[in-house]
Image 1 (cartoon, rainbow, N blue to C red):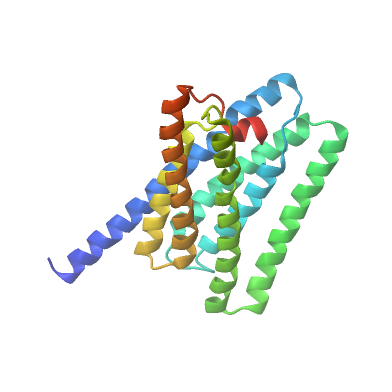
Image 2 (image 1 turned 45 degrees about the vertical axis):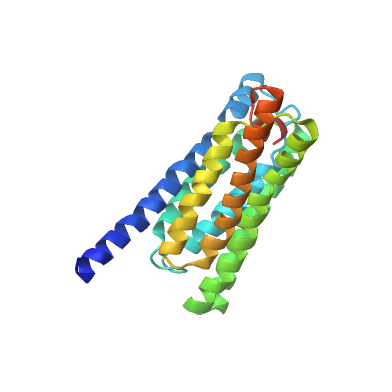
Length: 235
């Protein structure tokens, strides 16, 4: 095979990994839908917290900015998945605000404005103070910090599973989707030689393996089936 053929195959594999990552990420983005159906039906946010969605929106916006050509050329699939994610999180937040009581409504509205202000500040600083190579480093480190902290959130679920010896609130399909998404973007980062994609998704992949192993072990012990995602019950 000539060099053009090798390059074409390499590019095809890279794109395939990125598209797979987009698909598995969308599975995760739609997972809170049952929660918001309940919120809309009851016209109340009950004991649910809107903070995870605010944080997820900020994370998606930072990673979206990192994936745009003006920051990092050639990784547009990072931008596409995070643009979709940002839309989902924004819709969830708007629904939460609409159905929340006055105090929580004001708090969530303030947090939403804070996210947009912080993101605008990141964009402004990265454009005004950094040239393109340095801009990629600046936004890349921010995206890594944001992604790793997001991937670390399942540690709470892992701790709960070990403590209760039950997988009731750790649905298999969500753990599997998280693992496959992380694995896909890890491969995408490797193909693109981008450590800012590879490193956090490598961490996410390892945590995904741990969740799947715990699910296999404790589902055999308890014989219990998972019910609602923990994200739904505690988010």
